[in-house]
Length: 93
Image (tube, rainbow, N blue to C red):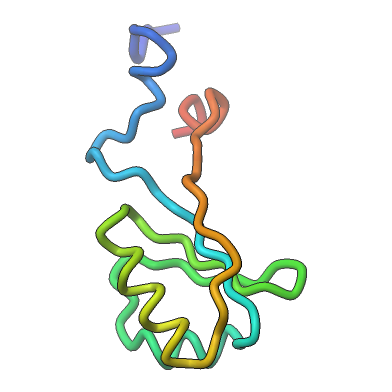
């Protein structure tokens, strides 16, 4: 084997680019409507889960874009949560 990285767990799990990803949960809008409202999503991932549309944004600056698109389509914001990487995620990367 070979040592790929060393350090404190908190340091290893910090985002390399300094942008912490977020998930924005939206209801009252479909994935297709939201994709249309976003146009070119610039790093935003859109999925559907348990009756909600989940927008995964690459960092805090992109949250405003996601919120504006959701509101323009008639969606209601349910929550905005940071996405924490696990040690397993780090290992797989």
